[in-house]
Amino acid sequence: MSSAEHRAAGHDRGGPDHTPGAGGLWTVEDHLDDILSTVRPLEPIELNLLDAQGCVLVDDVTVPVSLPPFDNSSMDGYAVRVADVAGASEEYPAALEVVGDVAAGAAEELRVGPGQAARIMTGAPLPPGAETVVPVEWTDGGLGGGPVDGMRARSLAPEGAEGQVLVHRPAGPGAHVRSAGDDVRAGDLALEAGTVLGPPQISLLAAIGRGRVRVHPRPRVVVLSTGSELVQPDEELAHGQIYDSNSFALTAAARDAGAIAYRVGAVADDADTLRSTIEDQLVRADLLVTTGGVSVGAYDVVKEALAHVGDEDEPGGGVDFRKLAMQPGKPQGFGSVGPDHTPLLALPGNPVSSYVSFELFVRPAIRTLMGLPDVHRPRTTATLAAEKALTSPRGRRQFLRATCADGTATPVGGAGSHLVAALARADALIVVPEDVEAVEPGAEVEVVLLR
Image (tube, rainbow, N blue to C red; front, side, top):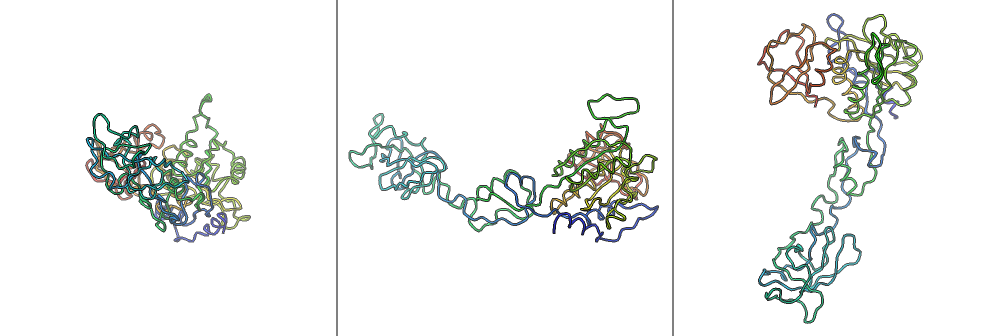
């Protein structure tokens, strides 16, 4: 089944039956459940390692060959037999015949016999007969073969041998040797399904000889903001205009969540233009996110453009607009559009409302598309550090910007959903439940961690 078929199959709302509660408001849980019961992980594909960075592994990966695959030296030095350097000291160094060099990747195999040493480089295979490696710092570097500065060398080399090294310290069995399978052994589990492939995981896959892996691809997320008052940064503001910050914030948030995100920018308050823009973007979207135009105003074009899309031509599609028992972010929309039933989440236009909505609803959807088992931000409890009690409207779950450190949550900024500067300082959201109207300083509060 293709990813498009997955989405189409999922959009029959096979999850729990959701109905609005008191006052026609949906709960945060019901809205999120509706999204996550519809969105499905993208169909697995096979990718080259570097193309798979940031993706989620579909299958367990076992080790085909031990790592390292052979005993090798961890230092530059000399491969020797243990007995030949036993008792070696600065005063009585052991003099050994150097029979050759062993470099990393060398195909020719030397053999180390009694009284012999092989000069060995880091990563080179330990030659047959050798049992240990003495670092070059424990030797004279092969500069001599007789007495050095009046010292007597305990020579084990044949009479008249050329190329000798003096060893000044003994080494036990396996010293400075990385044994075959020290890291992982053939048949071991290298990586579990569900692992996000970062640089260390890609390094391991390459080290065991895997050049391609099956993964859930990173979802392609298209972000559109709506509003004729929006102007792009670096342009001149006219009276009544503001800069478009939402599309930048949400595109960055989508990338932070693991998606490949595309920012379309601001679309004027015209339903036909918005509908046409969305249709044009479907070719590169696994998920569409709009911001603005979902309230009850006269120019809420997202509702006008999408409320009935798919009712006739695309059964099972369409976007449902609803009100949630939360603050900020009461107006929300969710559904699917286009022939592939591409999921669409419509967020409110106020900057804080749109960002909080992204964290609560869009981020889990993206992480679900990626195939991750845990899609939510971590939560914890903290002590409220505030000069006065926090107030919250009864029947609404409030999410307040805060900083959280050392078990303490400190609100930043007010409750206004337009306060972008306060949002930039926040690294957490304080959660005030629906049945709580005031939270006193020093009380324990639930906190969503954003970093």
